[in-house]
Image (cartoon, rainbow, N blue to C red; front, side, top):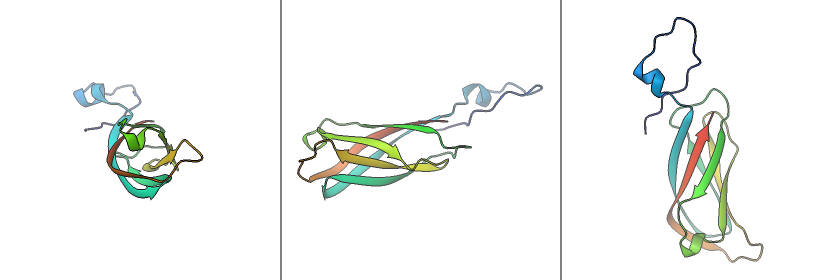
Length: 109
């Protein structure tokens, strides 16, 4: 993925292909693996740093058995990255094991 940071338009700036394609949205997919846990964290670094902490949304890109009662969210968001936090949604859930489960994220600053 190539990300061109968004630029605020200033008088006298030239229009270029890069500026027209510029966006503040970055996306990625993390491969998550762990053994016998009811929650996890995994550090994620943005390909291009933001000026300030962006908004981040996450999604488990699988409906496989071990993931069906889990959720994820971004915590500790900074201009350079965040922690992907995953947790079981049931208070009485047994520990689970994941192997290379894809978890997607979208950041917008």
